[in-house]
Image 1: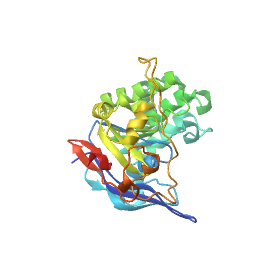
Image 2: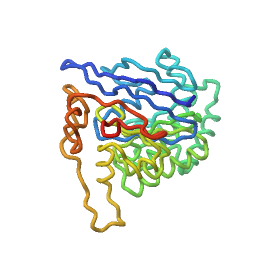
Image 3: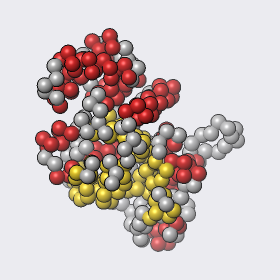
Length: 318
C-alpha cells in the first residue's frame, strides 16, 4: 500500500455552457519519500488534480468519482473539519504565486504563529516562533527576517517562505504547484535543489506540478504526464527519458534544448490542446498526432502497463 493512492479519480467543472472533464479516470501511487513530477501543458488538469488531492477544488468543480487514500484512509468521505485538520499537518500544498498566498499586512512571524497554533492550539507563541525560526533556517532565510513583511522579500525568498510554511508541521506529503513560475533560471534551480534537499532531510513525499518536463527529469523519481485531463504516460524518470512511448511525451522531450548539440532542431507540437467543453472523439491527442491510425479518432485507448512500472495510453503500444 502506498502513502498516497489515487484511484479512478474524475473531476468535472459544471458550467453554464456544459460540463468540463478536468481530471479523467486518473490513478497512481505515491510512496514515502518519493518525488513525483506531474507534467502537462496549461489546461491539462494537473493543478486540478493537485487541488483534488487536498479537497480544495474551487467551485464549480466537483469530484464525481474515485478515491484518494492517505495512509489507507479515503479522504473523499472526510468532513470539512477533518480535512482542515490534516491540511498542513499530514498533507500540504504550495500555491503558484506566493505573493497572493501571503497576507501583505501580516509579518512573516504572524503567518507562522497563526498556522502552527491553528493545528496545535496548545502551542505558545514563543514555541511557534522557535519552530518557525528553525524551519526558515532550513530553507535558507535568516531568522531575524521573521519580523519582515512579504513585500520586503524577493520572489525567490517568498517562495522559500511558502515552502517553510508547508513543511513546518512535518507533513508526509507536500504538493508544489509550479513553484518556480516567474523566477529566473538560477533561482529556479536553487528552489528545485531545495525541494530535493528537504525531501532527503525529512523523508517527505513530494508532488511537483509543472508544465516544463526539463524541470523534473533530473530530480524526480517518477513522472506522470497528463493531457486533456488524463494520464498518457507514467514511468520512472530515467525510463521515461530513455524510452518515451507516447507521442505527446516524445514531442515534449523534443522541445527541450540540449547545449551538447549545437545543431539541434527543436520541434514544437502542432495545434492546440482540445476544448474540453467539446473534446474530440477517441484519443484526445489524435488531432495533434502524426502517428495516429484510423481507430485513434473513434476509440479511446486504455492506460496499459507495457513493461513493468511503465504505463502508456496509446494504441501503437498495444
